[in-house]
Image (cartoon, rainbow, N blue to C red):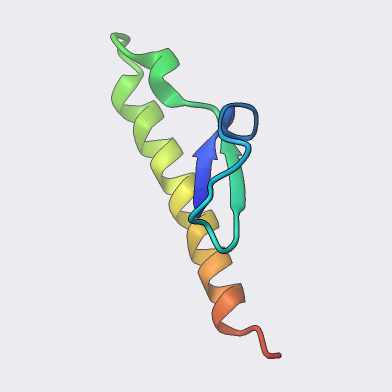
Length: 65
């Protein structure tokens, strides 16, 4: 399970079906809803999360037991 919301640790402390949990705390971009910066803010957050997930998956792929 990968969580990305900055309040997931507090609001979702246990996920019963998750084998592992990786928390990537990002500020929810909804603070920009309705502003002229909304599209830019969502795109930046999307790119940050994508980069972190890529790094995490690459690290898992290269992990040897």
